[in-house]
Length: 442
Ligand code: UGA
Image 1 (cartoon, rainbow, N blue to C red):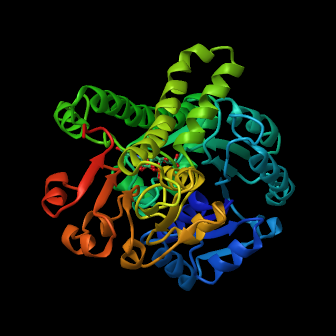
Image 2: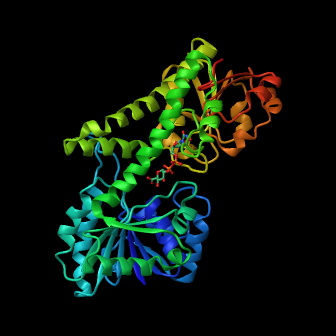
């Protein structure tokens, strides 16, 4: 099938390459010329394991290309919308301006198919009600139908999550009607190889599909803040949050995943999605239903403050003290620093007057752009040299595998704050380190 993907940021670029990988003819569009040029040249504009491989394979096969010109999309039977919906600058709601602008431009090329069946499929994370609003506009054109098909990919696993997701969710205007059934059949044809692999596919109304996405992220954020709230208690009453998480996680009603206590969640999705969810509930007059998500956000924020306090407990006055921060990305296997707890804590240490040096295997260029004046050092050993305090904030494999004896030879003082609870405190203490962790009593 001929497919377009409008908006080739993280989600869209991976989706476009994945659709080419399963045999479609794909054209990715973005208004960012630099991004389009990079992708067309086979270069990933972000770090994502396995992405460049499928990108290059798609380009080489001739089934994948990129453009900035909407006119190039005229022949596509299916248009996926992969636009970003960032947090608004003037509040907590989602900024839908990219989505609306794209729909306006798409509206100009849709008539080119002269009434032939055309599917517009939203993938962006949006407040409930957005799909119906867009459908009212676009479905006035003969033959055009809109579906909402939220994306659940995780950074670092994006290719795998796109080609082998846990489930496919299809949002339609009215489930069970002939129009909806026809739209479902068309999207099934796009995803045929995934459906052949027996990936479950759920059909529901637009609003429900939109809510599935934000509810999933809200639940994940809540799980993380739940264990981080327990971490606060552990620090005070004298407990070990990693043991609590291990023990409660063995109850499969609770589950072990997303119970890793530390500096909390960040990235381009969880933080802004829970805020937009609350804002949207408030607009609908049901803000109290999601009041707990404000607390989820507040717990998350407090962990960052606590990490700085802990550094102060270990060092005393932070002014002029040499601190090495391990990690800038919001999580390992990513160069994304959007709302990164690691970078935020590094910045707070810097603001407190510390002499901070940050290292990260992938995210330093983005980190330096976000926090001007931050000293960055790509080489791990050089970064460790002379540190009076080492703070682990992103659990890259490189840091989890650090040899405490070798590291002790490099630093000025073997003193470590484990902000992700990934190092074995006993092993590090045996190697001569003073070590403190979030959520574990001293
Ligand atoms: C998240 C969701 O996991 C995806 O399912 C979703 O599709 C995506 O958002 C999205 O909406 O696009 P992602 O932002 O890539 O994916 O990252 P996660 O793996 O969810 O991690 C988010 C943050 O939570 C990271 O900062 C991570 O360090 C933190 N985290 C995660 C914890 O602090 N503890 C945990 O136990 C797990």
